[in-house]
Length: 331
Image (tube, rainbow, N blue to C red; front, side, top):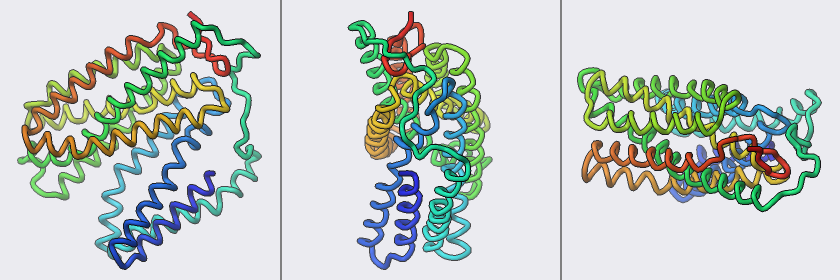
């Protein structure tokens, strides 16, 4: 599936660069989205497969993904200015095709498996599920889905609006679009590294405690940000993006610990579907809210969303030792 991901997204991107009409571009972009959707359920399952501690591996994976997001605008602008808009599709497409061609050789030379299910470290040796363990399992999964909704809305809102926030509130520091872009790149790059810290924490401490602390910080920083301008707004923007990006690996860790290996890809797929649906709805909501009441209302809403996420996290079991295979949880 990963070969299909790389080859498919690369070929679709090249087709987009060769398009001669809006319809062709729309079809190519749709194909890019279809093949890109392969990664989350397949790639994340591969990252956690066979591992007992998954926080840091998922965090490293997330850092690379977020650095891609942070550098995309800069790289795209460079390609467009140098070789035209078509190169912004064709160059990454060729790179993806090359990786897709080399990927099977890498897997074969490294002696890794072809992706077939592997028994996990935390297998339960046939432990049967009890009504209590199933009830706790559903409660955890409900918390995961709810926090995914809130977290996706927060993540998309902040990453989508941050350049506009800087444009309005850093008038003395960012007088041009280029400077706004560089400030946004700087914040996103620094924030992505927070995942490494959170990944370490969830591997060594209670996921419930770490998750709740992150949610509280989000709510506090959003409330503070509502009326700030100037250098203070830049500092708080860095602070809230640190905890927004830092949250990314937490739900993935919970899914990895909760789901048995044969269901893990489907669990990640369901979480991704929920996240992408929320993401699609968030952009018009944010545009309407900011256009009607401004950023004060937007950051107020984000503070409420983070607070609701904190309340939901309190419903997680006190012990986060989710035993894969039986989904039993030790008290």
